Amino acid sequence: MAKHAIIDDATGNVDNVIEWDGVTPLDFPGKTLRTASDVSPGDTWDGTKYVKKPPPPEPPPTPVQLLQAELDAVKARLDVTETKVEAAETKIVEIEDKLPKP
Image (cartoon, rainbow, N blue to C red; front, side):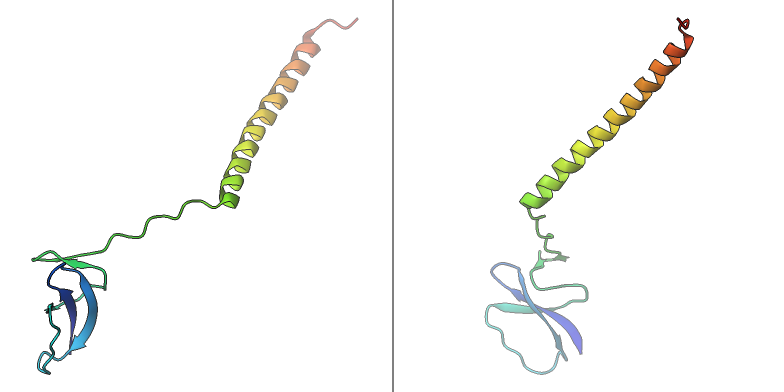
């Protein structure tokens, strides 16, 4: 038994993949059987090789994901701002320490 792809003659699309002994009569009108090892339904046969179907596109972000990304960006800016404020406060203290005491 060997793995075979059932290929649509008109489109080259792999319709299905089966195990076939190569002897038992099979008849799939408008289809061609070709040996296959790493092939899946949805792949195509270009006449010389199998071409993998492209992965599905990434789904668009959900409203919650968009809000979470916006929140993360605001938090990151806040962290930078807090760091700058802390650095400024430290610098103010350093300068104030250098000033003459009244």
